[in-house]
Length: 232
Image (cartoon, rainbow, N blue to C red; front, side):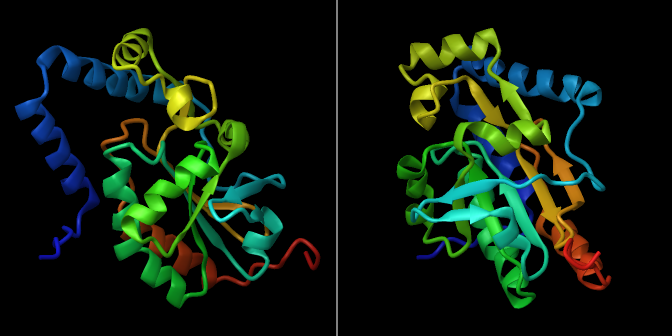
């Protein structure tokens, strides 16, 4: 029997948290909650990517082994990037299939590419694409180069590091990056002018951008005449 995916991504994420409240050891759960609350508290002082920012050239690496440059992505119009943590992240395994079901069809109909981006190395990142049969592109931001420029990285706090080490799964080993850095879930719409036209960062990874605001941002951008850098 197929599973019906609720229309609201954030309801799914709330249900995930509720299940953890029921089943996790309270001390372990509190480490998770404290890390997310710390990131939310720090967010007002951060300079995250925002609409109007110019995007310098970058190259992502798809799980199929292709180089995906900014020029290629936006050569025919806008593109949407969805940053997520890593292939085994439970919240990401709700969010990325949600975008596949509720965002990808609308963007495909508009000729707009959707790319799910993680710092995890491609040979490990491919797992999430295969698991869910994704048609959207999945690509690695090697060494967090783009995420760092967008200002969306976070570091595990001490309690989270100790908890990961106790389980034998330091995040640098899981992702293949060797660091304790991950991107905060982020959606970015980049126009053919290589500027950001929509950006939303979610410091709490159990609260993420729903599909409709992204579709609305893309439609607003498509309704405008955006010159390419060569003709501007």
